[in-house]
Image 1: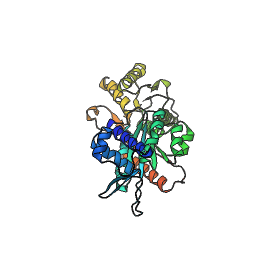
Image 2: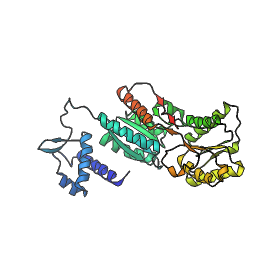
Image 3: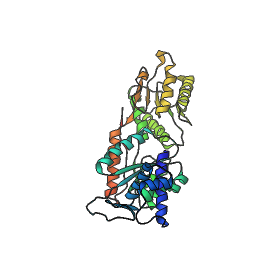
Image 4: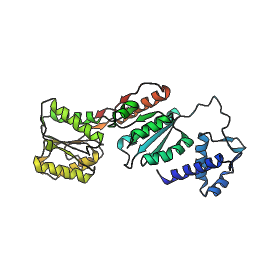
Length: 346
């Protein structure tokens, strides 16, 4: 989370504490006075007050000022829904998360909802800050992604907030207890392998991330099943799992495969690994080139000299399905759990 966001949230919490302990009551001081008191800019004060207004901790009266407490609520004014997009862990945002944030932001804006993003380093960081987040802008629904634990999901739902997961989890209870709009990596591995098998390739290598991550286990299983349908037996040497996902590890992995006996085709379960694999493969003579399938975009035209295919998720479909789940849960809190996945396209 950036420093500016932390500052105005922190100031909002300080003002809220002043209200709770009676130091601030009745009409609040002006923005200029509050800025001087808390040693921040008036812009920061204004943003902090907006949070407190949305949380109904303070209210404004035309031409009179800002006052402590909830004002008179007009029944004709609809309640504004808040959607929290919660990211857990220190890893950078994935392409899937970025696409969902952009798409959901547009839909929330059109529907009069407010989408806000929070990132948490770990469970401890989450539990320290969750109370403040709820006091200032309690979400009506939370989208969870990243290193989410079963305890986090239970903690949020215990606060009366529905949860929608954006990733698959090894813990089956977690996956079956909450709505999910997650990428089906088993299907990705299966489709990539079937594509090559249909084109006559038989020695198909797989380079993926660590086996401790559900995504990589699913990819490997999909590739395995795709081979079994044609009674093809894969050598164990053709599957490599990299503990770290970097271009260097992808490059090293494809060199190891070359040392064994270069395969007919290569499936790479990460765009970062895919770049490294591609650079390694390009080092071979032209008569040894082999096709590669990876996940990602199509924006690097300089690398298209090689036989490279991208099997990517349908971004529009992902946003559409996630939005449908989100609205369904808000409108029908008791609806049964639903798990869906966006489609994959070459």
